[in-house]
Amino acid sequence: MNTVNKLLKALGHNTILHYDKWTQTHKFVSGKKKWIANILPYQLLNRSIKKSVESIVTLCECDEFFRIFPENIDSPNYGDKWGRLANYIEINNRAIAEMNGNKTTNGILSSIKILPAIPPSAKSWANCIILSQIFPNIFGDGYNKGPFEENSIYGIKLNTGSYSGNIIDCSIIDKISAQEQFIAFNDLAHFHGLKTGFRTVISADQIKIAYPDREENFNWCNTEHQEIFINEHVNLINTGFECIFFDSAKHIGGYDCENYTGVGELPEYAQMQYILNEIRLRSGKTTLSFVGEKSTGDFDRYKNLGLNAGTAFIVPDNFHDVKTWSEKFKFSRDYAPGIEVSNDNNAGGSRYEERINRINNCLFAYEYPSDKLPSFMQMEDIFPLRYDTSTHHLMMTNPSYSTDGTPLSHWKNLFTTADGREYNKKVGEIFANALNL
Image 1 (cartoon, rainbow, N blue to C red):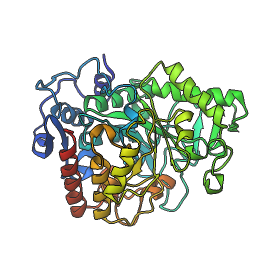
Image 2: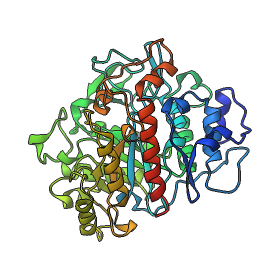
Image 3: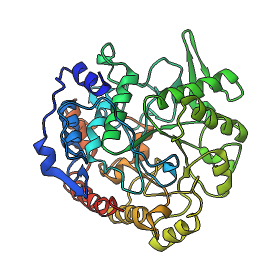
């Protein structure tokens, strides 16, 4: 039995799927590409996993409706160098997890539920979902706190034998393991026409190694710690992820550290080359995309490190500037610096018009689609957050915005309402014009 059907059974559903009329009435179409737009996120997040799977199957590009989810799902095939052109869309899976009282759970289920509203990949390039949290965080995993209490996603534990209690559904772990829950997510994302990846950190003081009787602070000079780091990431790749976004990658090997804002030592340059090569070798995958945060300065440094894309080397507000840079890098097929709509340090306050313009430039500023620069955007750039929070705030803290202790109330209050729906519609229209390029 595939893991999607295993997940359905674990949650008490049967595996017979039905065409979803609600999805049909909310879909956007670009050729054969289909997704949901002109909606508010809670409309998806409050649905059951069964309805979410039926929605994804209803949006299939194929002309056949699958009454039972297929056994074998392949990742969308854009070749080994797909990461060089991709649009990376980070979803804060902790922020959209189920907030029941002070507990935070089931972020992977919420990630599945939001998939139908993510535009699938285009003809010429992939859209790739990046999940913000996979590993347990060190500031109180599994619980939400007040809106200004530290609960940073940037502090992680490795070697725990499992993954974040914020993310996996621990109540069904005896029926479907944490790894299988990730496989189910990846199969559904791939079926919807998306690549997938996750964020990780490399600042030593932001990582702890768990042992049965103790925890140790991470040390890049400790070969056992290095092996644990490599193997933990390979294990995740083996569940179907094909991309890793490395926080603070710009500063590997001590580069430009006067602007380094992480905590602790970073790997040496040759050491990180080895680590990336080992992840590729041990996973046996030739299609992996490694993305580094920031890519200003020495572009050859990032390419030779083994990265496929970087972020934020120019401000993408001017269409012609972006197009000029896409022309300069059109012969670089292994690596290119990328542009951002926004990033994980976004403090909020940007106008909708600015974000819409940046998305437009990310998707259209080139002579030919094969020349496109990679791009990076956040969940907020598709589903605007409420006005008193921001992407960075939700990375650093884990508040519940529920007024009655229920997940539905949190989901309703996490995002903007009428203007957010209209914004989401405009984003859908921009993607609709791009997906057949």
